Amino acid sequence: MENLVIDPAIHNTLDSCFSGIYRGKTVLITGHTGFKGSWLALWLLQMGAKVIGYSLAPPTEPSHFDLIDLNVDSIIGDIRDIGKLNQVFKTHWPDIVFHLAAQPIVRFSYKDPVGTFSTNVMGTINVFEAARACDSVRAIVNITSDKCYENLEWVWGYRESDPVGGYDPYSASKGCAELVTSCWRNSFFHPDQYGNAYHTLVASCRSGNVIGGGDWGNDRFVPDIMRATSRGKTAKIRNPQAIRPWQHVLEPLSGYLLLGQRLLEDKKEFADAWNFGPPDEDAVTVEELAGQAKSLWPEIHYKFKADTDQLHEAGTLRLDCSKARARLRWKPVWDVQTAIQKTVLWYRAFYECKEIISQKDIESYIEDATNKHLIWTDA
Image 1 (cartoon, rainbow, N blue to C red):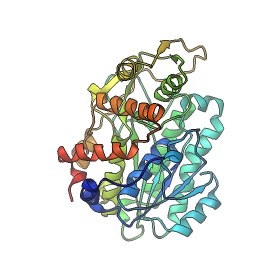
Image 2: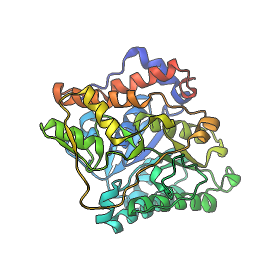
Image 3: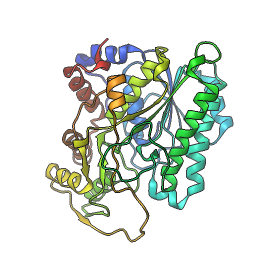
């Protein structure tokens, strides 16, 4: 279990992160027991937020959420249960909502398309409706996926203005979630009527493939390798030439938090869709990532194995993040090599030393961002 005592040297930096806007705020995270949600909850707690979580039970054993033992008000529930979700809003009166709860696995969506759509589409509608009935909510940040785009296997990145769609049920459900977000923003939270008819700003985020310590999700490339390595087995790689915009989990989270800050500051021009991803040079193949991981942990072994299920998965997928860089002034902190290094060292620390270094990673990330004078590190 991780000791959540913050390094005194970083206290002042944490206070100034995102202009200190999250200190004392009540933040509701749906999907807080998942990989990204648990990292987000940890960071928000360190910045002095009161975190409320609503999610299904941790999806894996072990789980990052259980290992870091967060001091959050954790409610276990299904995002499709609108009655229970409404009660959470009415009980806790959140200032801002980060909606991450989802069925996140492409291949599983083929097995349960109905569950995938009901969770990812109706679950999103439920969050918006619960927020609409709760006077305290000033901002909603809905996290979807880079797979929400109608992927034509372009070599260039998709922009926020490109059509959403999706070949497989998961991708299509995320495209639908983006349409729902746009619909509810226009119909019920229109920025032009903010402060008069409405008092809530709504934005959506699309990020690339995230890696980092504490992910044990099924049918995911990095967790599959780490699980196999921990058992002394050889991992099987089914699509080695697939290109993905790999980034450390803290990268999109810094984007979500910066966007949330702007919404809480009543800046309605940011109530829009946003991409958060690495530069093009950090979009590497699965095979390249595996090779770099093995160089950092020689016990990693893998082999290529053709996919006998023949389920469609994207070969190339990139995001154009120039909008976030120009308007939000958001920039990545760690390149892909650093992201891979941080990820592999997290798992080595866990499996070899029984140590959880998530907090150290956050501190290192903030320190590197501060040294680069990124906008969200300034008071």
